View 1 (cartoon, rainbow, N blue to C red):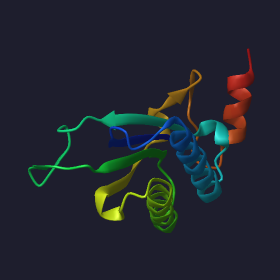
View 2: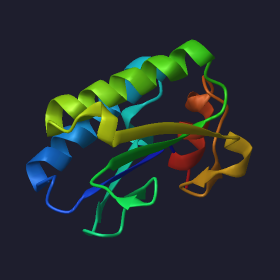
View 3: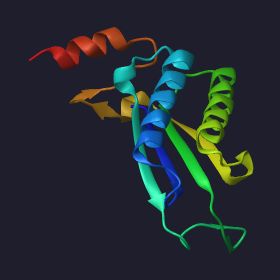
Length: 134
């Protein structure tokens, strides 16, 4: 946790671009939340031509959906949205008018990683101890 899912038109992103975006998402998330890099997961999926519609018409839009732990203040979340949007457009050249960025908060009590229920933000030290214990 968190999980960032990136959907983009087929052919927009190559391997190097995906790697750069993943590094940037990780940096934005960790700088804004203080969460460890180990937490950040980034997934990519291409949208085939004709599989994306906006206002009933085919479109070449991209989507960046982040599932993050509940507990971040509004200012932090909105700063993350702005930084994620700017990062995507700077790296891909795609205009912001063709990008939707959304953060969804998840109660950490409803998520498990490495066999241990996730901690509240700011309580990661105990979680690390639990996942490292045999």
